[in-house]
Image (cartoon, rainbow, N blue to C red; front, top):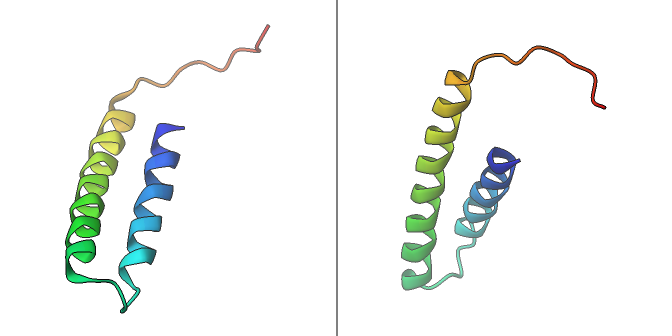
Length: 60
């Protein structure tokens, strides 16, 4: 869930950055947020790769 939320945020920042009418200070702040989001995604993906596979068990 956390990874999905970060992906949605990253995509939102990227979409906003494509707006040519944004002022420079807004573009700079969005770029910072986009970079942070990319860093978070990379870290989350690393953590997910390191998780041991859980056995499939029925939920009770």
